[in-house]
Image 1 (cartoon, rainbow, N blue to C red):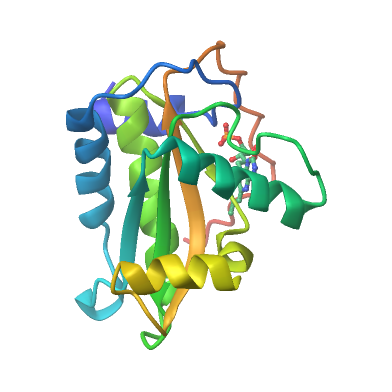
Image 2 (image 1 turned 30 degrees about the vertical axis):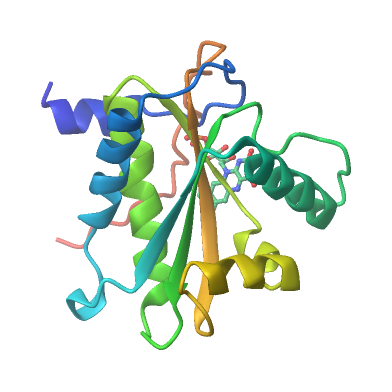
Length: 174
Ligand SMILES: Cc1cc2nc3c(=O)[nH]c(=O)nc-3n(C[C@H](O)[C@H](O)[C@H](O)COP(=O)(O)O)c2cc1C
């Protein structure tokens, strides 16, 4: 089967990770795949904040759990890397642009032998003052909204089989 098709069909969300660190070179390849996503009018509205700092990673997970109403849980399933995608709200397609960046990164992670998962609530996380402050430090003040977190790491379990696709997914008009 074509390699791209294979990755698309085989990728699954990983919900248990080994604590092992991911080499920077692999993280960078996943990020590069994200940056090559299509974007509305080619405006490249998203930005990626790559977090490998343990303290910040743990804080992001803690706040995510709080927002979800699940305090104490590790919302990142032990994954050591969090690639946060935010996007510039002044571009009308920013949510779609950011989502596609995450889609590319999930696929690239799989192709490189890594586990990955979209973890939600980046929007609510980056509405908090403490994280606004972080964005400010990174020169991302003002108009950036959190789209999602792509967590990465080495899988600690076999992925479950994909759910069967709903029968009503497609309508053909010929
Ligand atoms: C927009 C979006 C938000 C998601 N948020 C979460 C999340 O917060 N936590 C989580 O464990 N998985 C999350 N997921 C992953 C889904 O649970 C997963 O994609 C779904 O169960 C289908 O499994 P698959 O990715 O293996 O095909 C999210 C996926 C998407 C696309």
